[in-house]
Amino acid sequence: MSGASATFERDARIVNARHGDVNPGEIAIGVIIGRTSEFFDFFVYAIASVLVFPKLVFPHLDALTGTLYSFAIFALAFVARPIGTVIFMGIDRAYGKGVKLTITLFLLGSSTVAIAFLPGYEQIGLASAFLLAAFRIGQGLALGGEWDGLPALLALNAPEKRRGWYAMIPQLGAPLGLMVAAALFAYFASNLSSEDFLDWGWRYPFFVAFAINVVALFARLRMVVTPEYTEHFEQRELEPKPIGETIRAEGAHIIIGAFAPLASFALFHMVTVFPLSWVFLYTDQSPSRFLVIELIGAVVGLITIVLSGYVADRVGRRNLLSATAAAIAAFSGFAPQLLNGGDVGEVIFMVSGFILLGLSFGQSSGAVASNFSKAYRYTGSALTTDLAWLVGAGFAPFVALYLSSEFGLMAAGGYLLSGAVVTLLALAMSRQLESTDR
Image (tube, rainbow, N blue to C red; front, side, top):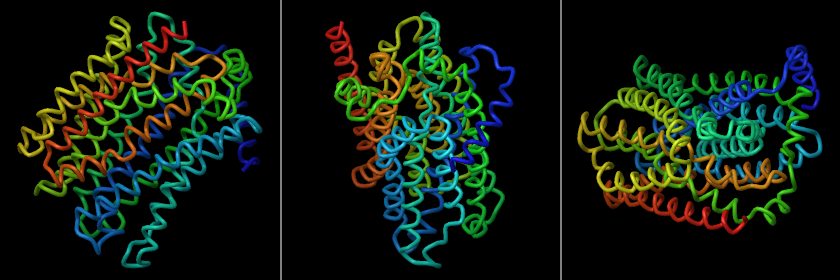
């Protein structure tokens, strides 16, 4: 693995032989490529956890129980992610970002492509579920080690009056990843028989995910291994610190940062993974049709994420997050029931949900991370991201589907409401802590 890393780094340095000074535009491109790769992997698995794994891995269970089991395995990556951060921060300190990034991208790519070869319950019984869980844990460990510091470097290089604009750039990876994943699954699901789709069609998006990981690896290595970037990371004190030391120094900011985006992350799943499962289980509509609706929603989300940058630079990131959390709370009171409203209701739910998601998710990573001291920003930001996804996203599809199946869609709205309340409390605590630090 170290030999492969050295080869990649050598090739990257050749490409960068005429590399100029570091600039925010170039950092932004690297960030978007990396995050799109990460979210594409995320959505490929998420869609398969609804359309494929309940039938492939859990055919001996009813459809609802099989989907809940599938969502439980889905959550394992988020549990493993902080562990991956601990492991790979040590590798980063010992061997550098290039080696760490190479190992994590190979682990992520191999875990993802291994899922493409997964045998089903009919072939190997319960071992299929254990293999799926192992590959999902591999994805989580790799995602924890994938942190390259480029989003933090981008934030530190952003002009003071355009911080909201630069804060939204990493978030563009989510709608871009969803658009590609939804389009691929919609194509195969609509053009293949259900037997062929479950036999081999669903596997192709996982092969595509592996290819995208390779491209993302080289694109990011091209940047982080150059002398200019290495020096810039050091000047900005964006170097890995021991996990225990970081928690002792920045524990309060890490915890608040993990809970501040809860409304956004809960809504994230309420308009992506959960509605697909609800429509698939409780309506007679084709999944490919709803994936097209999700693709359209992702386009709306992409536009509103960009819009969030303009708005945040005028009203402030925390103010925008507070306003959108309040709007999400209002949305939770009526919107989930629209999923039972036929075509019109589904479109209204998805479009309005993605508008709110774009405005909130676009700034969810920047409002609290700025509180970290320079020495701990690199490791602190990684830990905050891991815990935010664990708290806000890891179990969201499972909880939302379970509550709605037991108590109706109003219960899923209550879950979303709880996320909005927690976000408002965390933002208030963040303001108080920031004033205390001063």
